[in-house]
Length: 211
Length: 244
Image 1 (cartoon, chains in turn yellow, blue):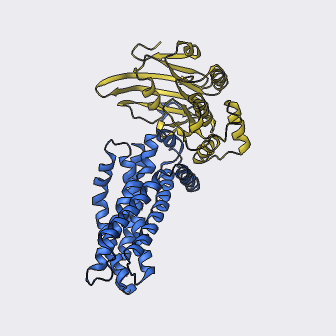
Image 2: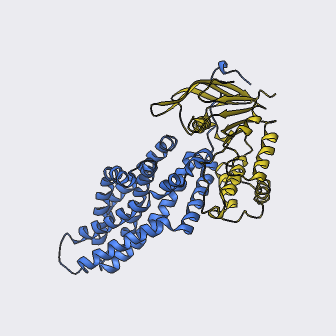
Image 3: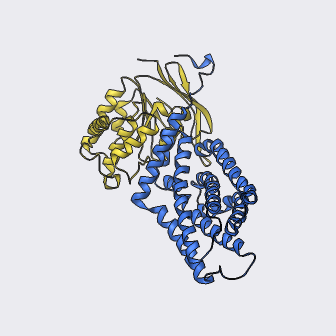
């Protein structure tokens, strides 16, 4: 198990208005492990994911992402993180290929068209890359989110409801992705689907004690 | 891996200027591409400008022949009011659209904040350039305004528009996540834009009258200084606004 990659969470707490979602949450995940965040709707799973990737500030506590001895706070670690979530929307007026080109370029790593084709093929979108997202089904948009999240080959993957809206083939692609990526990185999955808890090396249930 | 107790790690390497400029260009191209396909801002801005100037021209008629020493000032004020209110309807779109379409989170994670600001500011400059050009052309034709020095007139419009873009792009980012955006945009913009508008209107009046460069020089310098100051302040503050 690699310790070059570490997710270190210390005494993290977050509330929605006056209602606490989680508090005093501490954990340490190392490379090769999958953390599953389970809990009912509204328990704070997506909030925790957003805090981990720096899109939301916690009320207290700290998150540290470590890679080869270098630590970054979530807001500075976006180059290390791939995030897939139902509330991440891509640009509907652009084609899938234009979306990928755009996100690769703003990340400072422009991709060759052949690389984008390969990424689209891997996501099951081969042949549909020049269609605008407005013409995509929700499942196809979810597949493109995976392609975008993997553009920069991040060592940390944050997956919020990873198979939502996906068909059986799409879910299979996600299962293969998790199997391949867990060997070289850290994966955090937020889910309320018991079948996805099978991936867990560490599981926390929001609202209950960590196991 | 170093332990967390071994002191703070090396600081995050800031993205280089080359990356920021290239990413800013990518944001600009994305904005243009989206706008060409949806024409969301362009239609709103141009329609507003055309309607305002046509309404003014129908209401007042050609006012150039009338003898009034304040006529250039009145004409300049009418032109800038049309540009200002049309700009209010369109310049905030770039950020509001990101929030409404829920694309802002992905953009925040992927792009350096400065690149986002630059790309959006460049797009707003293009949009306002089109708006100002069309408004000025309609204004000159429909109200039969005779501009004595066209070069001065164009320079005033360019510098005034640059200041307008510098101020409103940052304010658009601030209000994008608020609920009463339209009112908030106007409320926040008004105090910031009042000095710019006062100088721009006076400088436009001077250009319509046709004065020497020595006379119009100071207001032009103020307009340039305003644009540079607001653009610099926006560059420094945008990171805080965008990540908030």
